[in-house]
Image (cartoon, rainbow, N blue to C red; front, side):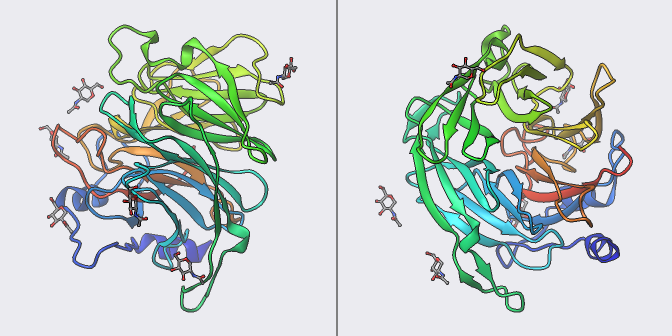
Length: 356
Ligand SMILES: *[C@@H]1O[C@H](CO)[C@@H](O)[C@H](O)[C@H]1NC(C)=O
Ligand SMILES: *[C@@H]1O[C@H](CO)[C@@H](O)[C@H](O)[C@H]1NC(C)=O
Ligand SMILES: *[C@@H]1O[C@H](CO)[C@@H](O)[C@H](O)[C@H]1NC(C)=O
Ligand SMILES: *[C@@H]1O[C@H](CO)[C@@H](O)[C@H](O)[C@H]1NC(C)=O
Ligand SMILES: *[C@@H]1O[C@H](CO)[C@@H](O)[C@H](O)[C@H]1NC(C)=O
Ligand SMILES: *[C@@H]1O[C@H](CO)[C@@H](O)[C@H](O)[C@H]1NC(C)=O
C-alpha cells in the first residue's frame, strides 16, 4: 500500500505523444481543489488533446483495460502508472467510431462495444455497433521491458443490427452480457457463446424522451447489477433507476427512480457497502449516493472546472492495495466543452474512497 501512495502521489504522467504540454487549465486544476470538491483527484495517465476515455474494466491482476471513444482502441494501463499504455486491441477507424462499454465474464474474458457512426443527435448514420471478445488469457508482457510477448485474442462476437447507439455494458452471467442502447432506451442481453441477442428490458425510465425538451438524446447509459436489481443511469433525465430482474435478465416488477439529482449521469459504480459513485460527464462532476439518502451529493468537480473534465465511468481496483481506489475515465469535456470552449486531454484519474 505504501508503494501505491508514494508512486501515485508523485503524480505520474505517461503522456502519449512526445511534445505534449499540459494545458494550463488542467495544471491548475491538479494543484487546487474546486470549491465544491471534497476529495482529491489524481491523474494517473493523460492521453493528449482531442482524446476521450470512455469506460474501463479491471483485470484480476490489477491491470486496467480502458476503452477510447475518439478512436476504436482498448488500452492496458498499470494501476501504479509503472509503464506506458499498451494497445490491446484496435479497429479500423473508418469502420468504427470508437469503443464504449467493456465487461468481464469469466476470468480474463472481456467484451467491448465498438460503435458505428452517430450524428450530434446520436442517430446512427453509418456502420453498425458490434460486440467483440477480448481474450486476455493469451496476453503476455515482459515485466522488465514492457514489450508485448503475446497478444490478446480479439474476435468479433456479433453485429447488433437492431441497435442505434450501444453504450454501457455489464455482466449477467458467465455467458451473458447486458448492453444499453442509449438512443433507443432499452437493454439487450447478448449470449457471449452464440452471439444471440434480444431486448431484455425496455422501460420508460430508459428513454431520453420521457421528459419534455430533453437536454440530450442519451437515455439509458451506465448499467450495473446489484443485489438482484438492474440499475441504470438516464443521462437526459438525470436519474439513477432500478428494476428487479431474474437470472435471464427479464424484469420482475416495476422500475423505480433511485435518485433524481444527478444531471447528465453517465456511468456509475457501487462500492461493496452499497455506496454509489456516479460520473456526470457533461457536468464534469462526480457524485456519491448513500443508500439511506434521498439525494446524491457532488464530491469532486464542477461544470466550470477541468478537475474531472467529462468524467465518464469508474471502477474500483481489484488488488488488496487498491480496492478502495476508484479509477475514473475522463473524456476531457469533449462531449460538452467547459464554459463552451475548454477541453483538456482525456485521463485515467483516481480518487481514494476510504472516507465515503
Ligand atoms: C494541446 O492543447 C494545448 C492547449 O490548447 C496546446 O497548448 C498544446 O500545444 C496542444 N498539444 C498538442 C500536442 O497538440
Ligand atoms: C479501413 O477501412 C477502409 C474502408 O473500408 C479501407 O479503405 C481501409 O483500407 C481500411 N484500413 C485498414 C488499415 O485496413
Ligand atoms: C501483436 O499484434 C501486433 C499488431 O497486430 C503485431 O504488430 C505484433 O507483432 C504482435 N505481437 C506478437 C508478439 O505477436
Ligand atoms: C426468463 O425467465 C422468466 C422466468 O423467470 C421466463 O418467464 C422468461 O420466459 C425467460 N425469458 C427468456 C428470454 O429466456
Ligand atoms: C469558467 O468560467 C468561470 C466564470 O467565468 C471561471 O471562473 C472559470 O475559471 C472558467 N473555467 C475554465 C475551465 O475556464
Ligand atoms: C453549470 O450548471 C448549472 C446547473 O447546475 C447551470 O445553471 C450553468 O449554466 C452551468 N454552467 C456552465 C458554464 O455550463
